[in-house]
Image (cartoon, rainbow, N blue to C red; front, side, top):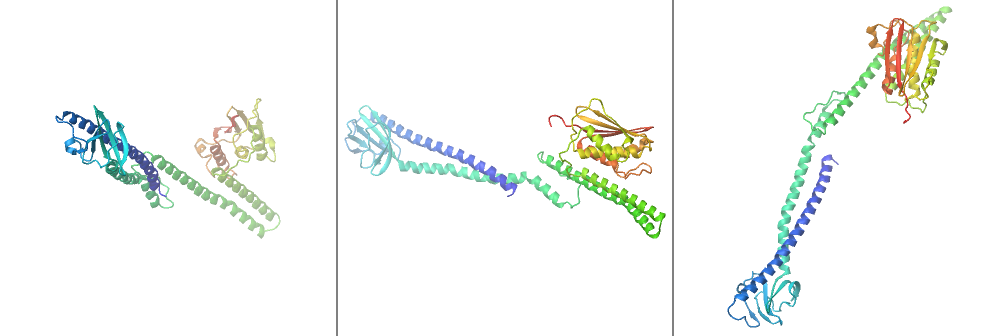
Amino acid sequence: MSLRLRLTLILGSAFVLLWSLAATWMLWDLRNQMMQALDQRLAASAHMVAGLLEQLPQPLPTQGTRLSAEQLGIPNGLACQVSSLRGEVLTRSHALPGQTLDAQRTGFQDQLIDATAWRSFTLERDDLRITTADRVQERAVLQRSMLVAAAVPVAVALLGGLGVLWLGIGQGLAPLNRMRDALMRRNADALEPLELQPLPCELQPLVATQNQLFLRIAKALERERRLTGDAAHELRSPLTAIKTHLQVAQMTEGAVALQALAYAEAGADRLQQTLEQLLLLARVEGSLSFEDGVHCNAQEVARLAINDACQDDGSRIVLHVPTKRTAATLDMPAVLAIAALRNLLDNALRHTAAGTQVELSLHSTASNVRFQVRDHGPGIPADAMPYLTQRFWRQGKSAGCGLGLAIVHAITQRCGGALHFVSQPDGVRAELQLPLRTAEK
């Protein structure tokens, strides 16, 4: 069902219901007013006949005399009867049937004469009873005529209102149709913002959200293209080196062949490390979940990261833990916190000379923990600082794959952390700030 038809049905149903209730109320009130007016006519006619009889100079007609409606001064269609208090009919109009009207009760009453229903009014004046009456059937005919006359305009207005409602909803939904047409005309790879002017204020947030979605999709596609291109470029070199060393090993013997195989194994290790880093970066930047129910505090993350970074010689990293330790766990998956700190330690060890230690310090607050990694390498030039977290960027002839700091940066963005670098003449200080889980969580 279309939105236009749905809105028309909902609003039209409410419209019809309200109009029907209002029309029913109006027609019911009109009927009551008409009945009251007819009753008032009967009463007014009776009073008028009584006044006319008082003004007659001659005596009243004898019993059974018939006078016309004009002589009695009553409107056509009404019957009139004048009787004494003893019940003797003194005169009546020609419209009265052969049977007399019941005049024993004063006021209004309904009576049946010769299978015909009458509405009568009886008035006592001196020694006379004056009764006026009209047929209920004539009242019903008049009532139907008035109801039809009042209902037809209401029905026409109702149908016209539904038509105007249909056209108005169609006109109101025209901006949505323009949006649909604009989206249908776009190419499958078109990600530029949708420009539609003018738009009602209710649709502007929708278009803004749509444009933000296009922007995020464009960034994701650009990130994927860049990752694919960089990965193809970076993987080509180790694959070529492995293939070359294997060919050398096939063509030689002895120490030369063994050395070529060792070089090929080192290239395979580098290729494996690059692939693992690429997969981790893709998972962190994607929508995959790392939540496994395991949460660690800062000391546990530091210990596990040191074990991963220094599997052979853990003495190269010195851990400084504050005397006042916090038991609060990190508000992020433990695997991401360990991976981020491990990459910082790997980078520091790579740029620190053998035999020189890397320092790791912990500083905690109520809401976050700060890991400070300090190496004792040559430092980084100021113009190279903006490129530290760029994919596949390496300083000089570094042996790394250029993805470690990019992964740390992606983890901090995903988990609400922060990453800062300070270069000094005797090394670089990296500060990784990660959120802590509060008591409310």
